[in-house]
Length: 182
Image (cartoon, rainbow, N blue to C red; front, side, top):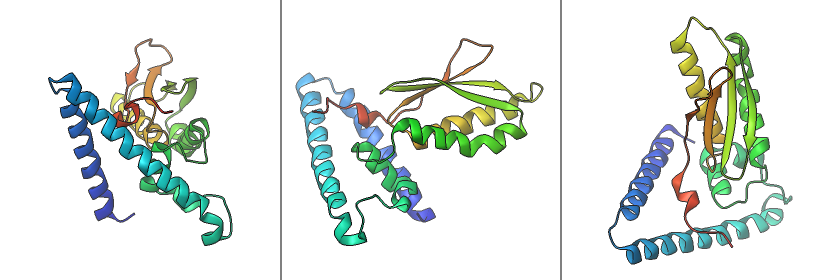
């Protein structure tokens, strides 16, 4: 993805989040419900279209497996996740994201452990690290939060410290919780 398209993607996501916030704060419950149903219908339409594209993979690429480049591309990967079509489950994507952070964690003598993974949330425990370097720990925690959010944007992320019961974090793509899938 080019820098321009990445910035454009981020700008569009911000616009979507702002519009969702406006819909959710609308005083008319019927209008809110109508907007939610419209959003769900559009997402369902896209899911069917993307699903059909995936069915055509053997004709295009000679295989029915989703190309690795699609899985690695942030935009395409997030679309696959949004429509529940990504070939890797959240657990695998999170494990991969954490393993990619291992060199950084080892450098700072820090460890991560997944405590809980549900359909809505992932909780990880952060331990170790340079105790005297609070800004470094905060930066590492932010990198962990960012990496997990990129890997599994459909989940809320909570990060707790091994010696602290207070969770931190809490990123989630709000559009994924619009209505029930069925």
